[in-house]
Image 1 (cartoon, rainbow, N blue to C red):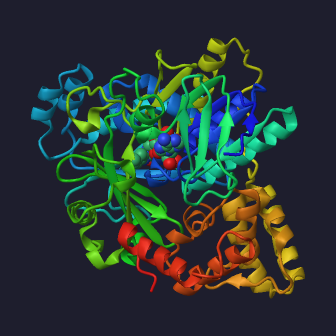
Image 2: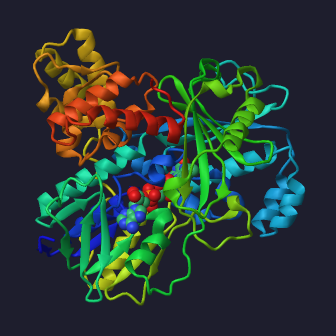
Image 3: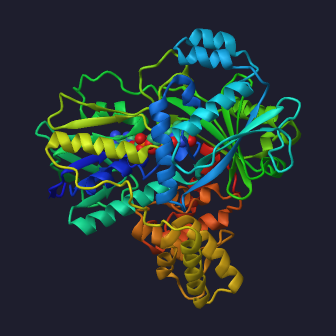
Length: 572
Ligand SMILES: Cc1cc2nc3c(=O)[nH]c(=O)nc-3n(C[C@H](O)[C@H](O)[C@H](O)COP(=O)(O)OP(=O)(O)OC[C@H]3O[C@@H](n4cnc5c(N)ncnc54)[C@H](O)[C@@H]3O)c2cc1C
């Protein structure tokens, strides 16, 4: 213990998308913030979602109009403020017939869930129900400037090649995709650091740290395996307040930090699994659309383009009470998702061997259930105050990627109000640091290209690197080139220079091989990833002092095994 006492105002537990957005929002009002996470940035549900920024068409059936309106408003905002990371995507919603689902939808709206279930059958929602839902969706998005939906005959050229015998009609509407919420969350924290520099407030981030709270309200942080800072021992903070934004871990965090707190369980999480398919026929059957359909049991299934060549399929929805870090896609879920794809696209059905990898996460849903049906649990977020704590303490329950910013804004307003601090700014119009699109994106790519070529790369290589860097870092791409070595060595088969690895360590808090591969450079999703690339990243991490030369081979072996055991991905 080094006895250092930092004068921190608010401590946020959890560096997922919600904790990061909240830290940034609080800093905009000039208060100092420390974010503490037991693992890395965005290593929870944020990384294991369907990666959509959407109004949530399905929530209309449960009468969640306020949530859908808020989500649609935030959808537009996130596309505007982070266009490099959140992109509009057209959705194709195949419809099984004309009438199915109307009575069920009406019954559900009236709160008659058992009648709704009795009427749903397995034929799915029909044209009238879908058209009504989409018209309502447009209405709730009124004034946003987003395109309105249209109903079409299915099977036309240029549309997803869904089973024409099952689906005579389809609805087409727009939502958005956040391909890498991990990068979005890192950028929220990069911006938090920037705001602190602008305002003079303090911002610190302690990843891989555990916290314990004393009866005097002092918080003690101890580094866990993988921590880079605090190596000299523990750190003590005297927070004015604590906000528990640990998602599906909220109850576990309360139990460890405030063991005497009488709050009943807040979270009733469900696990959801996804597949990433390397299936060219399916990818081309999708075209430029995301497809939103139903599995045989009526559960929603998304079949989405994932990058240029892969397909993302999700998800399942199964009650889960274990440690969220241990949630794993099991074989039954994998079969279920493959069957759902085969039902929608029988001519382009994927096989087990097309599963390049899978992942699974736990939704941080409120414990209270509308009726025992997991799909019916509200996706709305709540801020709950712990009254028995030795200092002001709140927990965030629920939330979506889509509403991370509005959640942060409303939670900051409530917390600051309770602390007697006035709100001095909000993130409503503040772009993320990498924001660029159209001409500004082209300019960033050009600049990277020039710098990479000046370091000795061929014109072709420079173009590939520019595209990759700007995809990941947006307008910050050219800054990443500051650490380019002469000849700009590239990490094998990745189109990324070693400088990008250095940047993640120096500027983005990466503290391990996993942090770089999974949540900074997103290489763990790259279908071309090889063991050689993992070794080369690891060697740069040795140069950066993150890893040691001794035991490097074992480190690489461990990561390769982790990819195989956790995500079913083989890079050998
Ligand atoms: C299967 C699935 C699909 C989804 N799809 C979508 C979608 O398409 N669109 C959408 O908008 N939303 C979606 N969501 C919801 C969304 O992903 C989550 O609501 C959101 O990511 C929650 O973020 P968070 O920051 O609250 O939690 P998390 O991202 O889980 O972050 C919690 C953090 O707390 C840390 N932590 C744990 N214990 C402690 C502790 N004791 N002290 C400090 N830190 C701790 C963890 O390491 C983690 O980093 C989906 C979720 C799932 C699971």
